[in-house]
Image (cartoon, rainbow, N blue to C red):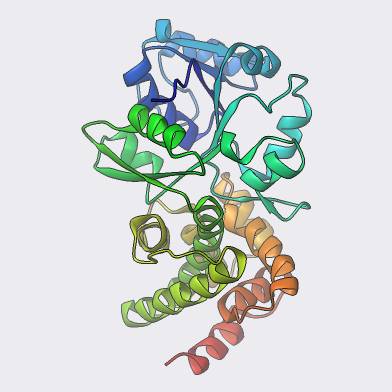
Length: 331
């Protein structure tokens, strides 16, 4: 089996903390890049991330915490990136060490703004990382439930199945089950779109549409997602797999979903800016909506839900008007 070598986490949010919790249980040593020295000092003193998932405790002796990203990239062989997608570009600009010989996994469920590329595409096209050295981690997986050790299912996508299998070994535990896929682009684009559709679900909830319509919008969202994935990466896939349908369901329905929460606030009458300020956490779907709208100008896929969310968030059109148009188009 492929040797992952030393593993490091890049990112310090809730999902990064959850991934670190899973991996260190197997390896008993990880590198971990955290931007702020004061956060690292608090982490070492408290034994947990002071800002996210504070219930997840760590043995500090098993962590090499550093604000020096170049030191982490230089010293570690496998890098798991878990930064919010809007910050990935600025984070990577600080990296002076070549990445092409590293094994890079991205657990970022978002898209790089301005570039309109999912993260694996950005690493490959901009930074020259070979496709066989790139993996994605997807599936229905709220960080809060991982911290509580509730049963979670993850899918690792990679062109090199040996590397994918090796990564699943360090992600598997009593409460995490894993599988391997070769659909790297499909997993990533599905993770972007499910956030957009979760915003739509939240908007409908905020507008007081009931459970019956929630089921209709999610089923239509899955049809829309499938049309997009076929256009982007036309390979055989089963859309009912947990990495597609499962991730969409949990993001569209769960109270842990920040994208659904963001949408609910918009549906209740909040402006985009006021909703973002009150949440204090990034709803990846806000950025993903604009990027996917731009991408679809070239794909020409029929995506009415994406269009509706874009019109609400970026064109200032009334949620009541846009959702009413959607209800008239669904069957």
